[in-house]
Length: 434
Ligand code: SAH
Ligand code: F3S
Image 1 (spheres, rainbow, N blue to C red):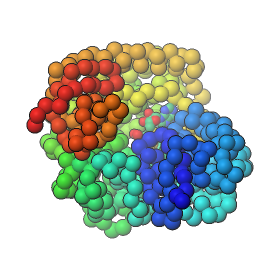
Image 2 (cartoon, protein in one colour):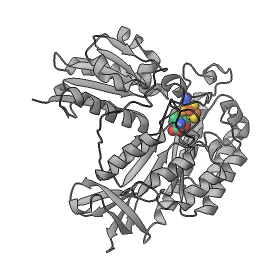
Image 3 (cartoon, helix red, strand yellow):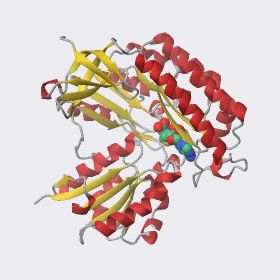
Image 4 (cartoon, rainbow, N blue to C red):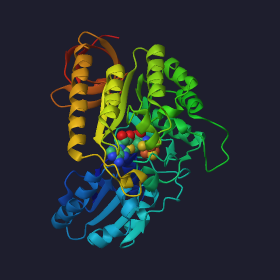
């Protein structure tokens, strides 16, 4: 009988892909079925995130609940960025944990599974050439890593400490993986990395020169592939050639994430982001000029140490001008192993909370205006998910979630859809004959 695997994935898209890699590697040795109930699982994996403090605090209470309700021989593994960060301390604090596997070590899942209290968290370990087994939670949409780690040292961010130095995966391997996924039905690929447009700075082999723009060119030649997305790019590396390629290559979806963090050039400098407010706005204007239909999303941190009312107003100004379609906004969370955690001028959490509310309230108004204006518009939607009550869901080229009436025959198809109903989070439409 197949064993049951419960896997909880927190955090970013890279973690989602790491979970897929672990599922694939586990299946090389034994057949596992996924379960949504930890109490019936033979193996419980928590794939953690450490970017902010909250999920870390939750981890130990969660381990307690899992170990209380689990079957007697079930193993518990803690993986991901918090595993990298806390390492053996996790087992010290929670001895019911059987193994700890860092974000850069997921290829070792079968090794740690068989070694009681194994801890594999080296950030020097290089998985850039590792040939992972295949597993995709949705075969219609492939996630493919193009680099691991991050070479930036943003002063608020723990990721370089947990995922290590940036190494690009050779383009030939990336193209091979995408070709295989496309042959198995994936019309869309999401290229993943902490800093995708820094691609090509360091390979672990003597792969020929290939930067991100060139990689996009190579990937877009894949037979059967119709859509390319990527996350996350860094505003600093958005040169003109990259933006021109983004705008002109019809396979590249017209949705771009440009993480702002702060609208204040003074704070951006202290964050070590490497760009100014003006450069950020210039890049957004260039996207709009070259590609008016593109949607722009962003990440914003409020309450970074030393953030004054004036600094925050500059962030609000950028929101007013760019009118981000999606905005992931966070209260600054001091993280160990990061310089900003020791800055003396930490912002009062009440003030940070007020700023976050103001930012999010204004963004919600903007989003409502954007979505209301969608009524009657037409989009090409790639349907990739079956929904209850005879409905299907998919994404428009510019990243909007669209629902329509339909069944299996629409899955894996790109169809023209007219929007008939709008809401803040999603659109409803009817499929037009194509
Ligand atoms: N390169 C990745 C960044 C990963 S962290 C990317 O662009 O997706 C994801 C987001 O978390 C960052 O963009 C930032 O907005 C937020 N973040 C990182 N560290 C944080 C901290 N200490 N406090 C609050 N938010 C943080
Ligand atoms: Fe973090 Fe900055 Fe890299 S936000 S992941 S250090 S680009």
